[in-house]
Each structure stands twice: as C-alpha cells, then as structure tokens.
Image (cartoon, rainbow, N blue to C red):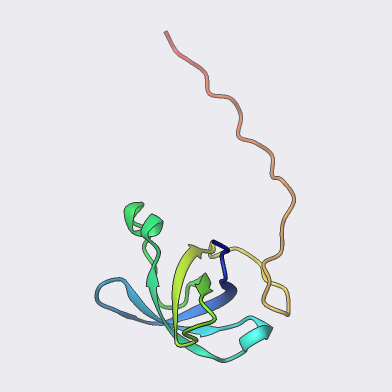
Amino acid sequence: MSKDVIELIGLVVETFPNATFHVKILSPQAKDHELLCHLAGRMRVNRVHILPGDKVRIEMTPYDLQKGRITYRFRSDQKFAEDGTPIQTGPSTPPPPSRRRS
C-alpha cells in the first residue's frame, strides 16, 4: 500500500478538546488554507503539548482536504525560509562529557 499523503507546514490558530486544533497552512502549496487537525498517535503517546502559535508539520490525505494529522511540532527557535520550509542549521557542538564521581 502506497502512502498517499500531502505534507505541509502550518501554524496552530486555536485549540479544541480531544487533541484537536485549527491550523492555518503556511506552505506555498496551499497558502492560507485552514484545516481541522488532530494529533498523531506517536505525539499523544509522548505527550507533546501544542499551543496556539506553534508551527507544526501536517499530513493530509488527498481524499479529504479539510482534515489533517499533526505529526511534528517545530522548536520555537527554528528558522523558516520564505516558502515555509524549515532551514537546516549546521550541527552544534556536542555538550562536554559528564564526569563520574566516585
């Protein structure tokens, strides 16, 4: 079975009960389109909290263009290009190794 999904970047506008959100699309493919989205199961299990103003990655099926599934929440310091795609930053320096005390 092929995975026929459309991945977009959006901005959470409003939250509803039962992990449901009103999201405005930022990606150029469907600019200013608004969806009703729910959290993906992996995000529910890991208890990822989403608030209005968060940028998220959405999967939507081509069969129903009014609903979607939130699969990822971007960090608040993540930078985005003009077309709405996230900018990859270079690897940061790893933290120093921890020392064991005996």
